[in-house]
Image (cartoon, rainbow, N blue to C red; front, side, top):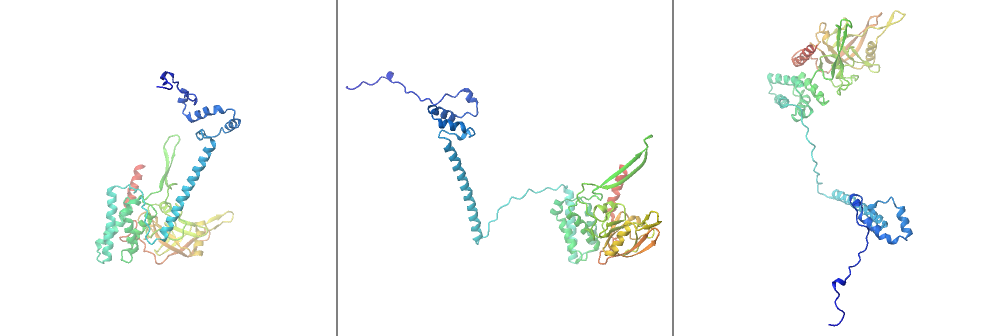
Length: 440
């Protein structure tokens, strides 16, 4: 064979590897911010140390994120970010254009628009027990059955009695907003109020249903007669012997009670004839009267808005549709021996001049002198108008006002099967009084 002999494997020298940088040290391995690309980049640039411009740019761009610095230079990284932002903007514009075209297509289409399925909100749960819910359901059925028989003119005295007992007991059955809707008790009361007169249902039953419906519509579901009322007591002790000299108890409105009604409103103010309360402060809570103890309530602009007839003066006279109501004793003027009309008397004079109606409430304190007074507590008997007055005593400026009941109002509920308070009102009030006696 001619030519050069084949080289021996021992004569072949390995190729020299390019130096791409120092190997990764253990310190770099532990450092989470170590960047292999950055180390390769530094190795390649060692041969370009004479490039002053590049070294200058590298020293001035210290604030650039190291992740954006790749081996192709900073300019390409910046251009890449700019291209990415442009792509995101194009996608956003494309989606907006697609939505606009879809809306326009649906508007021009004759086919009905497809409804979007909405996931229902989680159902709220009632806090009532099963037996309490069953009581509401039974009351609903009783009202519906009675109304059906009244509409068919097939009702009997038993149906009337059952319906009256149902609406009288219903305010003392525990209820909440969820259960009165699910059991349709509120709907049954509303139908009774709307159609009661047309079906010739007794008026006291309609008023009882209307009073409870109004309360539920204001989200008042507390069945306690003293709701929103707190007791306040003062004890005076003998500091030497430690004995109690005098114990004074009273009532006050709770500051955080959410359902207090403003009393300085002319007219019924959401009340129904026959509404009853055990104490005057309860009537104040529900907007019937504006004073906790005084019998005359109002302001200078409207005059008297409500009065409580409790026969505080012996000259008060009660004839039902007409009452003779005394103002308060006048205020003495110093050094003159004369008096001027009191604030309450001036309010009644303003009502006489304005002709505004006055809510009249009767207290059980007047039952010794009046046949129309309730057996307990205080009852709302409708609107009266001040028509005249007379001066009983010039020296004390004692006035007596004539007040006539406005026509076309429900009858006063002072007697009969629809009397207020009814047996269920008195039962709850007596329970509460017994409880308060036990606390003492």
